[in-house]
Image (cartoon, rainbow, N blue to C red; front, side, top):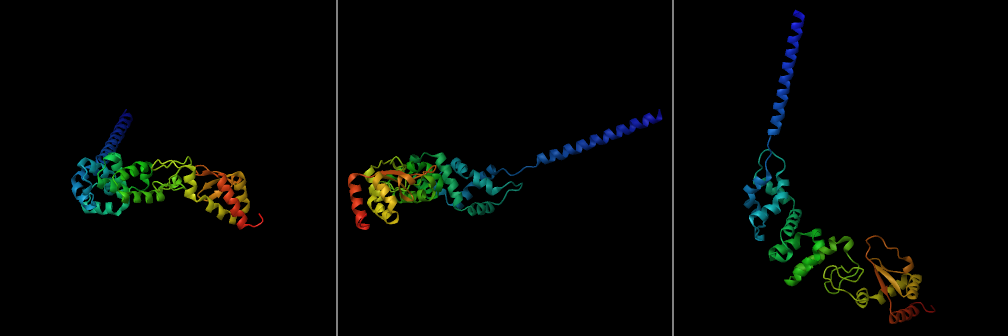
Length: 276
């Protein structure tokens, strides 16, 4: 009996210790859960005016709610995951260190908040100046709005943006109307909507001149084009039909020669290559 009692007492002590350990772990877990990090949205509410003035975007005349919306993500990134509120000067320095990338983010946010036709002059100019590649999908809308407002300076900026960021949408053919490199294989301009004729396409690429130059480099290719009466035009120049192997996403044009052009090219070939 005494031995049994002793065993029971030992078991009770063990259970008591286990219970204490569980309580200690729960307290530790609760303590970790209780740790609070700074809420960036609350800090933005407090620092908003100073941030806006420091970044020089007050001229955009945005409402308080819209300012918070355009700044929320970059501001949260600048604050970081911290338990102590950073000084406003620290946050401003971090935001300024983002440079044009910050302005690019703001321009994207503005395009989400407003329709292009409802943008103020300052907002439109800001977006065109800083939007970069994000403007490509809506380049047609921006072009038409800038044209409507007679903002030729902004249209020039849009052309630069298109040339730099249009990537696979950039065409080897420049539109004669808007002067963007944006003519598609169906001869329509992706930016202004103008539809080129075959004659305009030929004038744009100077068809006789480029084939005359091609003759000097590739006699066989030239005569194949002359015989077939057409060629393919890409960013690499004219390509004879038998050699053309289109790649996915490539922009190319089928250029058909008329009787007058073929006659002129034959005459040119005889003068350049006598006896041919």
